[in-house]
Image 1 (cartoon, helix red, strand yellow):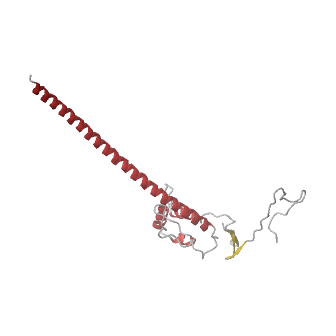
Image 2: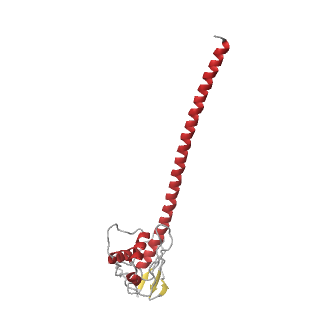
Image 3: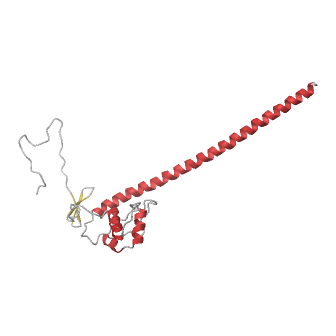
Length: 198
């Protein structure tokens, strides 16, 4: 065999080895591209879940405040509007939300079902129309309310404003100054009366 034949054969083997390496690299690139695409899909799915969770949290915050405010409305009050809740899915005001508690009695079953669905408040069991309306009242915050709330004469709000028969009066708060090293309680043996001063 001549020297040129041997060199040509070695060159062919080198080209085949190089083609195999290129083919292997292309396969790895395709696999990596598939992994990247899968990774991007997972990131997109996580971003979507994060956005959905943010919407749900904002709606839940709004609804908690609205429920609290609705619970403060006296049951005998027929003129006060309910504070509308938001859809847990979109954080937008609910369509066909009752203006007053008494409106719930005349709502259609479809509207009641839609509101429960938008509030994610379905129980998973079959309920008759009366049970669904009771469930809606509960979710809105006007279900069974305590006797404290049922007294319309005085309702304390979070900011210290007292509502008295529709008029608001700011409570005067007296703050004691505590001097370092001084006792702040009553003298020993003295009993202080409990309750408001008249």
